[in-house]
Length: 166
Image 1: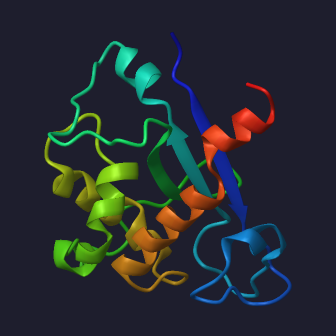
Image 2: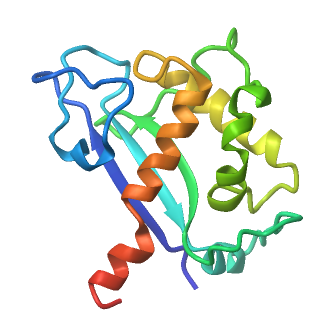
Image 3: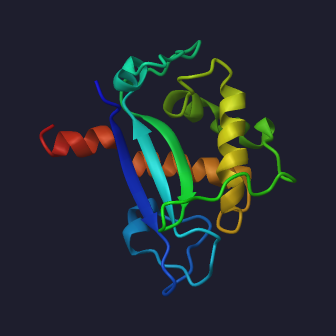
């Protein structure tokens, strides 16, 4: 079987209105920004656990597996139009689990690691590698994780496929 992922690209163009820090994801298609955030767009990736876990490397289910039974978050990554991406942009701002304590129930349900039993180290990796490169747009760890969860709710992969009769 192949890995099934849904990619959502969030475009950041060089003209238009600035993206507010707290925004309505339903307006994401019409959002334009005026400043350079150090990347061209964000890639939201959702994965189907069954196909991910059937890959050769296998998977490790969390101690408390998600109950929602749908697509899981794989990540939100800043990218450049040339196919490259920034990573590990700010080592002075390491992951702080207490900063996202209020988001833990949603993170466990929609963004668990399928390769490590240590969920906190997985989220630390996501923040340190990807989130720190979005600090000009999302200046806090909490804002990064909250945005990822909000985008997942708005771009529900299962709902998109169901609406297409898949």
